[in-house]
Each structure stands twice: as C-alpha cells, then as structure tokens.
Image (cartoon, rainbow, N blue to C red; front, side, top):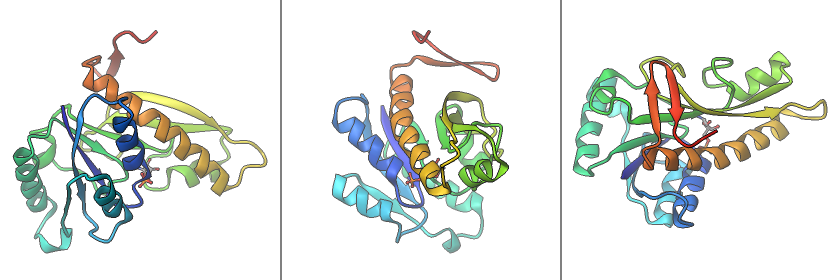
Length: 202
Ligand code: GRF
C-alpha cells in the first residue's frame, strides 16, 4: 500500500509512523506528506525523513471543496491507497471522502465519543474524568464521529498537570497509530455497520 499522511503541526505522529515503517513494523510506503501550513514543523520532518511533502494554502482556494478537488488529483498522481490524518486540523468534505471512502483514518486524543473537537486533552482534564485516552477511527463528514477502530485508555492521576497528561496521551498515540496502520495494511480490519472488527485480535 501507498500511504499519504495529512498533518498541520508538529508532526510527532508523522514521525512515529515513519520511524515504525523504517523499523519494518509497517509494510507499506509512506509516499507523501500533505500539509496545509507550509511553515509547519512536520514539513521539516518530512524533508529529513526523505518523504515527499506537498504543501498548500487553503486561502489560495475559493472553497474547501476547491482545494480538496486539487488534493484528490495529487493523491491520484501518487497512487495513494490510504489517507492517515495525523493532526490535520481541518474537516473533510465529500469531495475527498467519496473517492477515498473507508480509506481515511484519524487519531484523536480522547476516548470518543467523549471530548471531540480540537481540545480533546484539555477538555477531558478540565472535566475531571479519571480515565481518558486515544482513539483511532475512520473519518466521515462529522467531527470525530466515524467508526472506531481502536482505543487505549490513559489514566489521569491526581498529580497530573495538563502537560504531563499531554505527554502520556502523545506516547499512547505514537504506540497505537503505527499498529493500527499495520492492521489495515494486512487487510485485517473490516466494518460491520458501525462496528469495526479486527481479524486475529482476541
Ligand atoms: C495529536 O494529539 C492528534 O491526536 C491530534 O492532533 C495532535 C497532533 O500532534 N489530532 P502531532 O502533530 O502529531 O505532534
């Protein structure tokens, strides 16, 4: 398989996926980084890793649909099979969803459906839950609403600050996301309605 990673920011998940692929833990090619912020740190990471980076500015396009139509062309040129959102801070429309139906995944830093949105870590911390975590899910046209593929819990201890919690969440993300990507590459992940079943996982 050929994977495109979409990211907007620091790219620590991008790095974790690339590192796992280099260690032989992901049987696929990380063919492309797509980034909507040309100045983002993830673009540097891609350069250092030798992954082709495609950057664009949403403001240069009249609408979300317009830049997504352009992205579909870029993805087709690179024969991309799977889109991995890793801190891509934009909603996706039908223009991208339809051609890649069931082939776009995202990682979210909470146990969905709790705490969707851009502040998943802080919202859980401030709410006062004792357990939060990480979710990998298929992407649909809602915000963090698609079928859930995998989740791992992260406990919030009394001594945790927002910073220490964020560190624990990111460590959990970096361990989980490469694993899920490999399950998909192995063809072990299937949908049964909203339920996602993973072959060979007890
Ligand atoms: C991660 O916490 C991810 O769950 C969320 O955005 C953050 C991206 O971080 N969607 P990074 O850019 O991978 O470091």
